[in-house]
Amino acid sequence: MSLPLGQDVKSFVDYLTVEAGLSENTVLAYGRDLRDYQMHCKAVGVGRLRQISPTQIQKYLRTLSQQQRSEGSVKRALVAIRMFLRFAKLTGLIDDDFTAVLESPKLWQRLPNVCSKRQVVDLLDAPSPDEPFYLRDKAVLELLYATGIRAGEVAGLQTSDLNLDIGYLRCLGKGNKERVVPIGKVAVAAVLEYVEQLRPKLAKSFSGNSLLLSRTGRPMSRIEIWRLVKKYASRAGMPRNLTAHTLRHCFATHLLAGGADLRSVQEMLGHVDIATTQIYTHVDQERLREIHRKYHPRP
Image 1 (cartoon, rainbow, N blue to C red):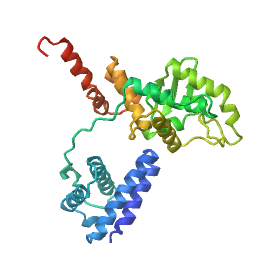
Image 2: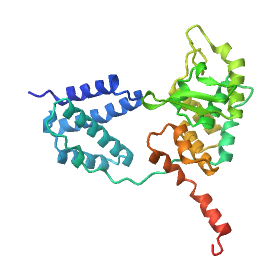
Image 3: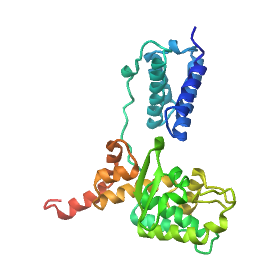
Image 4: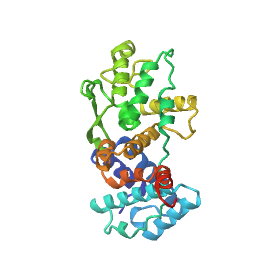
């Protein structure tokens, strides 16, 4: 006799946590999506794994669309369900894997929000030198833009992960994959000033080797990094939807616009698939239109 669907979902989430090597945020996202799907199944009378069918899943996806869920949310829900069913097939919970016949929602490729170089400079200059955490906040902003690493990766940096003499850092990305990213001179100077002047004052016995410390001496979290960016974005008069991840988009876009090759940017961002990086080649269309207008004999 098969187990209730909720127990099978829990087994899958436990598998992702212990064995799959996915990041904590990814596991949490899949868990939320599958719990939402489980609640839908309960509402329509599907209580066990073997009662799930391709038609039932497609109806669920249409329900999400009717609820005005974003296209990305619908796609992520489908990915979570597909992974769950593949896990079920591998562990013998179901006999057939019908995930291949599930039709993925057609998605428009959404271009990331990107700021101009002038706007980024305004953001980086937003911290005021007379503020108590100026050196730390300046270091955080400079690191985000100089390296393109994620907020969670910045929060997880240890002092031993940086080589400021040579100018690079080592970080752990999604799936605990390690990569090395260069740091520019301006960011190196900002981090060095923070490490020498402010971090020793913030450090406590429980601080460990974490690079970025809060007012109480504990390591800064990913959420605190996001709040910090939001605070200075507001001060600099930036768009309300600007986040720490926007600086990652700016890093990639500005590098490619300056002539960097796609493979190098892919390595620095930590993208497994170069197709993920290629989206940044489309966001500088206005610059291309301006060049066309300026140089084409028949603009």
